[in-house]
Length: 339
Image (cartoon, rainbow, N blue to C red):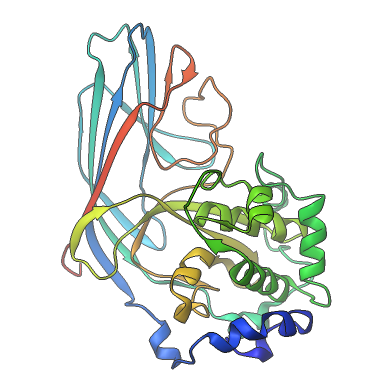
């Protein structure tokens, strides 16, 4: 990460860290352009004694410009239907009354062809450095991606922090790059102890650690507070150096909007874990992943009885009208051919 790309007020503070980063050829930063794999999503929902009503929502992956998804099979021990919420996310929905069994099993198998999602690197994106940002979005969509979520505030302490980090910068690309660098160099990727994984931007800011959810929640708070539309995307990572095996859990990233370039991806957590690719993950995400849903504070389809869902990648279950987390999950993948 070269010093000319840094904002002046960050150069001195970050100099020791930057000097420790290895210099590598640009070609080494680009992963393979596409990947085709089978992804298996297995869940068992356990019902407590006395369950009168059980409602189950399971996210369903779908195709978009960066991935082509084919559902190979759905096996369920209970009746279900496929639905879609107002934001366009698909899901499997099952509703049971006075269930006789103590659990329900769901198996979904996908064939996924995922392509490299690259909007451009920092220097390439600078030609779209509009100020004010986000004017190319429809008004309602622009407002939606600037609003606060329950754990993603856009005023107060985080707004002041973002203003300080981006001082002297103008335009969506320069401001977002300064925020990206701040989080990359200030937070530590760590899943030790408690508090991480909820996507609480204030917690991440105060504790300066967390997982991908925490990194990108702070990113969204800071960018939105500066008038830059941003959104949360979640799915699963596919191990890059294996051809098959278990997938341990979810992975999320974020996107910000730039007039002329559209939605631009960032993955600060992956950049932190693979520091040699820190350049790459501002403006791109690799093909070794599958997207399942987007957004925070979600209303499902049909609407749940409980509060908005923080994020949606694992099954959400309500028993007798209350959220119930008694779910066992297992995910796996196997590489397939190139088509």
